[in-house]
Image (cartoon, rainbow, N blue to C red; front, side, top):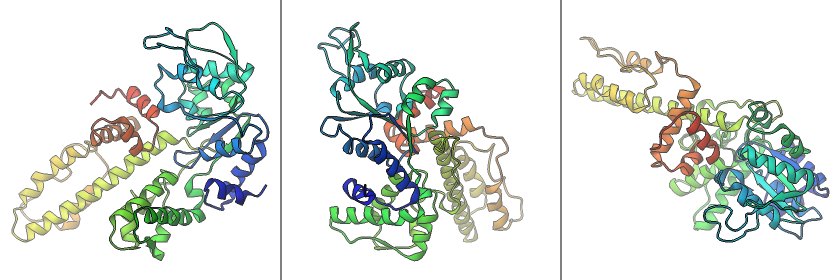
Length: 408
């Protein structure tokens, strides 16, 4: 089957070997009824692959239902997936079909499958093994004929080892694995995607299309893109809406790329997938910390300039301790000590800002600070905070619980 026609049908952009290999596997397995596990980091476009598998299967004329397991509260997910009987719990005023019953003879896509509670994993395993399920509040087993395609953005082997995911369910779901490559491994596709997103927003809002000069394009393609295609689209939209100049240079683009000067390198897990949610959260911490340090350096330089113009030097020493506290207490005390009677050169002052913190910061402490910062920024709205941290809501809930973060 011609891969190019599949790309056109589903609006997939790119010609990298890794992307084409994933599409080939999806098309090859589509005519079968085998379970498929789609792995890949958050934001890489995993949602297209179950649609392709369904569209090129014998079930294509029946229902296709997509379920985001990370967005459904743990207390209601069994009811959502398997249905419930009237009176089975408070608020169950009528009997209701679940997704597995609704999708009979069709395909069900379980996104963020690793977020399923262990009790729900047992129910899902029974469906995969026998095709049977039981509604919440019922004792009668029912049959369903559903093809299951699941997706995850974490390393399920690690989740199995940690006791968060059933090993038998992992092997049932992972009959055919499909790995969707991260954007940094599709460098030749990055510029094509940016052009597409910029063109789409220009048409939508009737504005000239932005373009990149050579330096901006090199920066675009060398950046690590921890948020993958979702982040790239967000950057293209921001630039198109905010920048007056339609020709984007590297300095302009760099304002929209956190930590662009030294983009982090991703390390894949043992099965080829990224240990995504925790690593991207750490990336976010490093991005924010570097930005904070850069802003603080600029602040010092501006104050030094004011001092040369006649402002007292003591104002500099008096300002910095509060700035240090505002940045989450990564160091102890003031970042700059009160100056001696004679003035110091500017390099000596700014050099202090790059010193390592006097107290070590653990990974858990850093994660806690990043989560608290995101929650405060979005007034406690977890959905918005999770989006900024490039993790799922369910992962954020778990991190809040594990790190003992109090409600804001």
